[in-house]
Amino acid sequence: MPSQTTAHVPSVTTIASAGSPTRGRRAARIALRAVQVLLAMFYALASALPKLIAHPSAVESFDKIGWGGAGMYTIGALELAGAVGLLVPVLQSVAATALSALMVGAFVVQLTVFDGQYAATPLILIVPLALIAWARRDSNADLLRLVRRHG
Image (cartoon, rainbow, N blue to C red; front, top):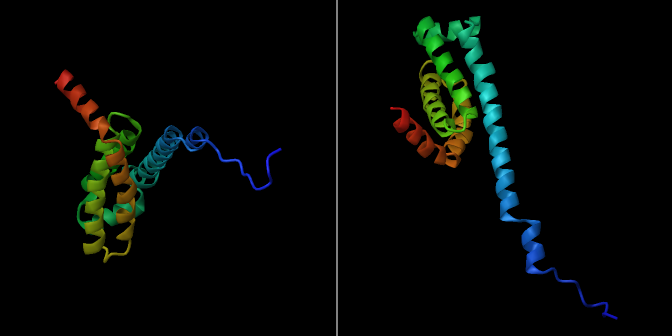
């Protein structure tokens, strides 16, 4: 009969399988994919759609910037393309990088034209976009191979 002071010590195999790196990596991939889907929905519905349907608030903003309808539709189309790209495995890193560049531009516009009123928003969005661009950077090699094969 074991003494009451003897404790069960789990084996190394038990510890490794409980918090396995494979399980952790899978959870991280799923979480990253969820962030990509949420960002894609945000860019498509909350950001691009008002520009593409010429919502009065978007029209007013772009008139104030001095870019008018052409600038509004262009930015809306770029945001929609970025949203779709976040969902396409071969494009996800490039799309996140391109959307980050748009957010740098949005930050500058917010500071210079709108007195910094919503300047934090593009900076906040750059953080998950940069994470996606870095974490999905292997897809860039796949994209390059695809372009070279069809180019």
